[in-house]
Amino acid sequence: MALLLLSLLLLCARSPEPAMAGDPFAYFDWEASYQSARPLGVAQKVIAINGQFPGPPLNVTTNWNVVVNVRNALDEPLLLTWHGIQHRKTPWQDGVAGTNCPIPAGWNWTYRFQVKDQVGSFFYSPSAAPLHRAAGGYGGIVVNNRDVIPIPFPFPDGDLTLFIGDWYVKSHKDLRRSLDAGAPLGPPDGVLINGLGPYRYNDTLVPPAISYERINVEPGRTYRLRVHNVGVSTSLNFRIQGHSLLLVETEGSYTSQQNYSNMDIHVGQSYSFLVTMDQNASTDYYVVASARFVADPDKLTGVAILHYSNSQGPASGPLPAAPDDQYDTAFSINQARSIRWNVTASGARPNPQGSFHYGDITVTDVYLLQSRPPELIDGQLRSTINGISYIAPSTPLILAQLFNVPGVFKLDFPNHPMNRLPKVDTSVINGTYKGFMEIIFQNNATTVQSYHLDGYAFFVVGMDYGLWTDNSRGTYNKWDGVARSTIQVFPGAWTAVLVFLDNAGIWNLRVENLDSWYMGQELYISVVNPEEDHSDKTPLPLPDNTIFCGALSSLQKEQSHRFQYSGASRVGKTVSAAMISTTWLAATWLLYR
Image 1 (cartoon, helix red, strand yellow):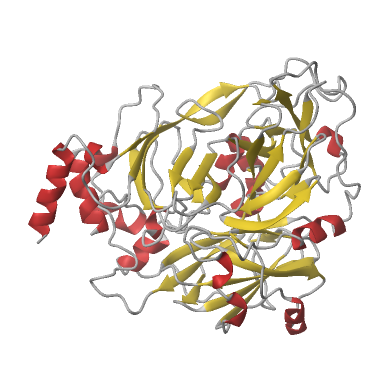
Image 2 (spheres, one colour; image 1 turned 60 degrees about the horizontal axis):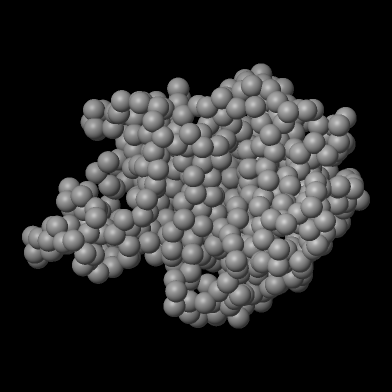
């Protein structure tokens, strides 16, 4: 049977027309390298993908198979993580330290995964060292609906992606050395929009000769703006002078459609807005992303220009105002509570999003995860969850589990804060396959934190000030809490989520604030399917291009991943099954059999 199927695949590969049934493939060939840039007027190195900063988009359709060959032309190991992509049956493609050995400098590695039953706005970013993202290396992921599944709004006239984020002129290596020395990063030097500095709206605050982003639009048309906060640690308020933001989607979920004049977007979060170009074209308009909850937000303001094709002049007047509450999170928390799931819209499948009645499912596990300000552990400044600061082992958790390597990690992460001294450890949550887990993030630190869970979307059911108690469940939204993968937790407050653990693997749960992530504020959840059989492996077997490290280094065939760095830019392209080479097609069949 295997020989027959392989023969059919070879025939398809020789056919001039696509003849292979099944989901299409999208192939991307990327090279990560350093490039010189001056986003804030100071020369520095950024991480570019195919010479682009931000990197090229990954634009696919739900259920497509994605193949990304990554050449690491940096001077240190590299991983890319696919922020919000769920990696059904392929958790080792997740691109974090617990699931992949990093790609050494001068090596290449090919990611292969399927965007199974997902739609929406996501992004990729480097993750071998959390502070890599402070140098760039990020880009957009768009997962489109299949044609047979309608989107719950008129098809927009254009689709635009904006990356907003705080930025330091220090290199990511210098930022890393500061944290290693026990010094905080300090305030950032500015805010970028699509890798560029602010338009010179103020001669005092913005120096001359700064390149800025210009967004070209046509009057009367409606555009979908996908906005991602890819910064280091700062929450940003996003707004467009004179225009309303109609929120329609966040991180793979269609939302109840509401108009906002501005939106707080916290680190690691993604939103889609419909913006209609319904203003007159007497001038251009400001697009603004400004820092929240800082002492001097005027110094941390990114400004781009929205340019109508028939505009008569430059943008003018003051910037549109941000919420006047830099030291009060009440506006922001109420805005977050207003974001609801569109339960009548279809997502990646024809059934409504609200057909999954999460409020009726019995919770099987409860984890109260408490964070505190950074503290000294054995003389090193560390961040913790429930008093444990995560330390990554040299052997990724998934490989250690599959190869039964002893002593790499322990399935003993506490389900509540412990009354003991903080410690460094590799403790992992032992999740229950197809269990329903309640996670409460309790933020006892002093800044807004964003938490992200790989491999899943969770339901945001509640957030409030003070300490969470059992009585807090009485305030939960059990009907239309939005499903997403990144959620903010305000200082002195809590946020509760529910997640259905139906995706086998070992999955990273981390704070998205890069300084805290670097200092250990993360953990993993192990989800093992006890009902595995040979007909439906969950997860699938390891691919033959696996990189081995740590205790399994002897299994590595080193020469199979090396490449000669040429510095040439490469582009991605979509190909049908018939266009893929015979060798690669056969290997892919073996992987997805």
